[in-house]
Length: 238
Image 1 (cartoon, helix red, strand yellow):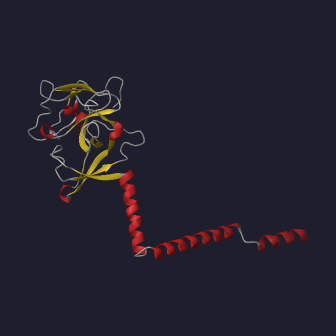
Image 2 (cartoon, rainbow, N blue to C red):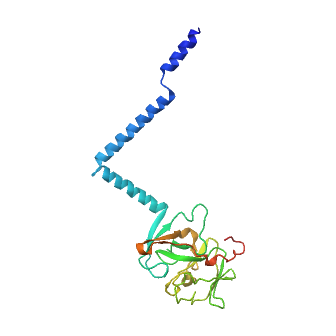
Image 3 (cartoon, rainbow, N blue to C red):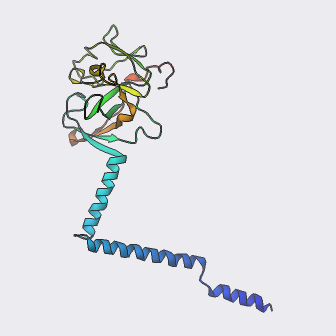
């Protein structure tokens, strides 16, 4: 019998397996985590309840900063769809990873230096490269030569615009209007201001996707398909 082979086999069987060594290390790490958690809860007033509240608060702050943020509607510029006091949930991931605002989207943006030192909510009517005109022979807004029927969201009794304009939207910017045109201060009113009434895409905070308060108004906000047949601008996409 090969005694050297036997001894080697006995030595191997007497050593803890790799999995046992890993398990032991993992156990030590787990015990360390529990010890740290125990010290932390002992240190905090209120113990585990306070710690749980802090974790929830941190989660909400991260959610608010990077994923979704609530905004309150301050005026009637987006009626009837959005009423004064409504709270909307803004999707801050909608335009990440290469996506950009589209015609018909309702967006929240920082208007500092363009509209005023505040956040605003408006509907996107023109994107970079678009030729936006008001109005055609029937009083409708025209985008890239195509007349747009905005009746599905325009405030009842309002015309598309009482102000005439003929603009080409610079690349990387948006031409935005409120749905309640007679009560909205928007791109039409800032054509002579810095930026020409256009909002840089980089100033868009996100897309308004839901009305979350009051509960009676709870609904999902969908982009209007009124602009679906608008052709892409020359040299542009979408």
